[in-house]
Image 1 (cartoon, rainbow, N blue to C red):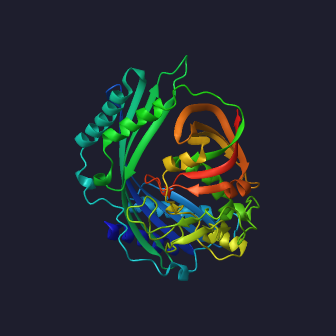
Image 2 (image 1 turned 120 degrees about the horizontal axis):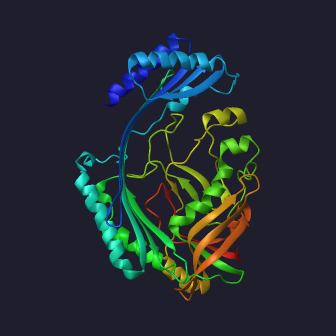
Image 3 (image 1 turned 45 degrees about the horizontal axis):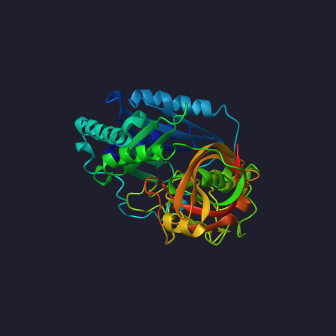
Amino acid sequence: MSRDMLDVCSWVIETARKAGADECKARISKNRFVEVEYREKKPEKIKEATTQRLDIDVYVNQRYSSQDTSDLRQESLKEFILNAIKNTKLLEADPYRTLPDPSYYEGRANIDLRISDPEYSGLTAEKRHDMVKEIEAACLQRGGDKIVSVTARVNDEFYEEAVMTSNGLEGHRESTECWAEAEATVQDEGDRRPTAYHWAGSRTLRDLPDPESVGRVAAERAFDLLGAKKIDTETLPVIIENRNVRRILGGFMQGLNGRNIQQKRSFLADRKGQKIGSDLFTLIDEPHIEGGFGSRLYDGDGFPTKKRILIEAGVLKDFLVDWYYSRKLGWEPTSGDTTNLVIPPGKRSVKEIMKDLGRGIYITGFIGGNSNSTTGDASVGIDCHLFEDGELVQPIAEMNIADNHLKFWHKLVEVANDPWPYSSWRMPSLVFTDVVVSGV
């Protein structure tokens, strides 16, 4: 299939060049997505969609446009390409918009990332329904008469793409994903009905955790929210649960983005080589993890992926700069996005860390909030628990934390040993000291 897709890309590029394009990039993608969702022990949603699309980037007289179509019949594509070039000529010139220098395509790794399940085609509708039923039954059984509602779902996806440029890039990628999820709502005092979620995923069905465990954990997390109360504003140590680190780190990552840097909207723009966090703050982009959700051999520009250290022992080492913004900034390009983002894990469990901290807050979820990429100021609501001497003693509601990223990451005092496996952001739980936890 990959050769057929690449042949179509080649024909698209040849046709575009003959029609007047100076340069051209073509990408064909095919996607099959299936989702089964149950509620009240019966199907609530069954969805299956198979799509294909051609994306074409056209460069004409320093003008650029990106357009797409799902009609891949050759006669339709000819008309689509001609219209794309015609419309591109009407746009304002942008001398920074070009395909990358082809020397940047060199050096791609020749390895199997194991991101496609060879057994995916054997996943049947009956298997999907059985998995959802197991998730729902386990959640209901664990929740008992406290359960108000349960939503269980599984989804899986097959993706394939072929990409080619008029100046030498050629790439192909296949991947699969399988996910299981449960959402549980329980009855609390009065009208409160806290809701919790649990999910797990893998590149292969064989590596997906037991569906029953997904439902059971969702119910347990909902129970953990019962009786939540507000506490007085206090300065405390805080542990952010592994699965939720991405929410707070995402605001920090905005400052690394080349677009924000070029447009003067980055609080990190002039801080390369400077200390912007504690010695424990190390951030690595690891593109070649076997089975990783972000693993890939080339990025959106076609550059070969490679390990990059973005932050090392609190020192800012690198930015996320794609080809276009590297030209506008006059910088060397790196890559405009991350693959598998990793904070190296520590040696101790959250339980062990809690015992040493004495009294503190364990954050298990974030609610709303914002982060300003220009100033680094951030504020977010939290779902959390008060802990004392290693034990969770009270769920807490209606609280938030607010700080500036340039101060907050200096407060990182320990990294736990529990990287979250169900994401391209493989974050362990993080421990911060002297955090103001305040009432909303």
